[in-house]
View 1 (cartoon, helix red, strand yellow):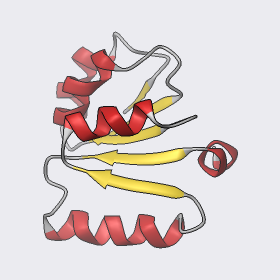
View 2: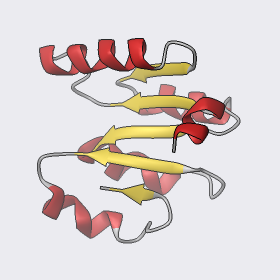
View 3: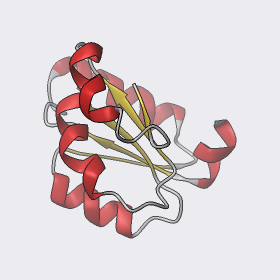
Length: 103
């Protein structure tokens, strides 16, 4: 996985990007991946543009955001990491993308 991150753009999509816990997580990711390309956004449209301009993007997303963007992703997309509190609730849509989505 580290090799993928090294060669990839790491994109975080979350509607709640600016709540305190996510701000803390964003700072951690920025520091941890400072030599790599890390971008955070709360906009699906912006995320789609970032994906289109990326060679090997990796997407981190919330379940709610993931449910909306994953169906739009190109087949060549490497991996989507969905983090959420309601794992069972998001398994229903994620099961259609077993090669892309990790819950």
